[in-house]
Structures are given as structure tokens and as C-alpha cells.
Image (cartoon, rainbow, N blue to C red):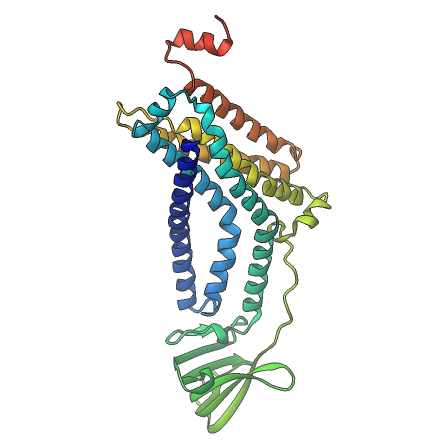
Length: 366
């Protein structure tokens, strides 16, 4: 029918716009956070893009669920506000006739949410943690930023570089202080770079500098100059082991586990596509808008319902993790919200009657 094609087209274009806006807001916030940490030398500069990508993949299911809910709500609210719904209803259509066109738009996206939440998001979480662990194990000299004093993980060394330049990414005007064995060694060099020796150790090579060695509070410092000075700053770490947290476990691992935490994670992943369908159905009656009132109270109620729904799922998920309830308990939340959606749809699809007549309509009393 004409209204189905026009509705699907409008839902598709609106969903693209909503998804892009939500993704841009969330990614910009996370990017600012990671760039700030990189400027402080907490993470390597080259790690920012990868961490943002992994983080976006992990958040994709929830972002897509919110996109579907907001899209259906906004499009149908506009149809009510512009009196198009009145035209369709006066043409013989009921509000129930809008369910299948909305579901036809939602089902492919729900399948996409299911694939991402069951397979892609756990892989992204695992790779993100492994990557972060690799960066953590690396000597902090690789994450140093120009103009920032950087302390090593052991706390025995402090590094400072003025700028990057020259060939092979070498640094210029380097300061390094080593505090070990009760002595302080301060080194100033014009140039330096990181390399790996034959023993697979990471070595900081300094060129054209001076070295001062002595005990704090004493005047018997040793002063020497050098053309080339090498310092072992750490060995190459092996690949980090697989993370043990439940978010990074594959779905196959969760299926064969009796651990309550793993079972709650499995239920949460299976609930993602189901909640996408339920929220799309709930948005149909919540989109009702009275053009005469001129107030969009339905949007506030809809967003409140969304947060209550998601928080209820999170609460039941935590109960499953603690072993208080079984896995099937999360279905109760979906069923309750679905029943509320059906009742609201039936209420909005009723003829205009008084409260008494409406109660009789619900109770099937004539």
C-alpha cells in the first residue's frame, strides 16, 4: 500500500539521521576524553583511533536500539501532528494496521543488533582489552608527549623530550633521570630514539649528551659526556592473555558455562534484539499527539518509559549475576512491557468514548 511505502521510506531516512547524530555525539565525547589522556601521556597517540573504534562497536547494539525507538516515535508523532494520521484513520485504517509496516522496518535492524551483540561486540571488547594491556605493558617512553614529564611504571625513571623530529621518529633535546640503587643519574642528550637489540629488549639510544651521577644531598657528582649512550627501557612483551571478564567472552563460551555472571551476560545479549522489537512496538501508541493541545508530552513519557525499561533489564541482569533469580526472569520484563504496549495500542485505537464506556470497552461489556 501507499502508506506502507511512504512510511518505510521516511523511517529509513530518519533512522540514518538519528543514528549519525547519536554516533557523532557519543564518539566526539569519547574522542575528547581519549585525546586528553593522550596529551597527558597516559596512552599512546596511535592508540586513540583503535580504542574509539573498539568502543563504538561495543556500544553499537544499544545505540541502534535507541535509534529505532526514537525514529518510530519521531516519525509517527509528526504524522499525528500534521493530521496525516486523521486522514489515514478516516480512510478505514486502524492504528493496528501500522504495526506490520513498523515491524518490517524494525526486524532487519533487530537482526543486525543480535549479530553485533552476540558475535562482534564481544570480539571488539576482547581486542580492546588486549590492546590496552599491550600498551600498558609497554614502557611508558613510547606514550610520552613532547613537553610533558613522564614517569615510568616502576617510578624509577623520568623522561622529558622537547620535540619529535629527524629520521625514524627520533626525539630531540631529551632529559632522563634514573633513581636506583640510592643514586640519581641525570642525562641530557641532543637526540634519541627507541630500538630493539638482539635479546629482544627495547633500548633507548641517546646521542651527544652529558651524564651526571651522584647521591642526593652530596656534592661528589660524576660528570661525563658521551657520543652514544644506550639504556634498556624494557623488553618486548608477549601478547596479552585473553581477558577473563564476561563482556569479552564469546557467545559459545557463555552457552557452555554455569557461572551466574556468564549466564547473565548471555541473557543480556539475547535481550538486545528482543528489546529492539518491543520498543518499536511500544513507540506506536506512545507517539499519539493531540494537535489541539500543542504539547509534546508524549516524547517525555516515551523517554521515561525507555529508561525504565532499560534499567529494569539491568536490574534483573544484576540479580541473575548474583544468583537471586533464574535466566528466564528477564523475559518477565519484556512480557510486562509488551503487555503495556498492547493495552496502550488498544486504548489509542478505541472510539472516542467517556471513561465509563472505555472501561466497558476494555472489559468487553456491552
